[in-house]
Image (cartoon, rainbow, N blue to C red; front, side):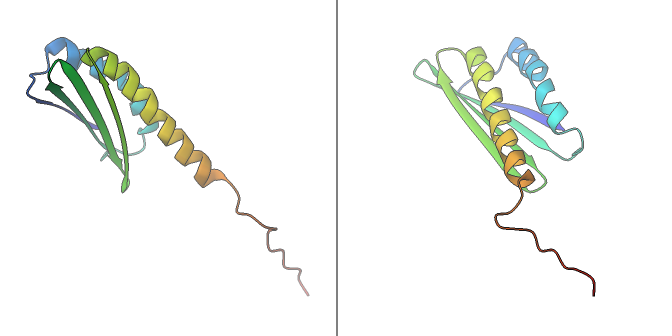
Length: 108
């Protein structure tokens, strides 16, 4: 898993980077099988409002979550559970059986 932290109109502090890496441990568990997964945090500051975008690209699937507040640390706490919920929902959808009865062929 490759983690990148960017800032637009804002330089992410070392403490924000440390907290982000620590919180991304939950994502690492989900992405353990995919070493090529890319995780991008983008923190934008516009008129005292921090916007945090989290984008995860893994196996050709893109997950994205966004949060806005007056603190970038609060955004990290909001964005990661949102993204994990998307990943969980996608896993549930793929794990379901198709509608209808399964085809059963008897041998003659």
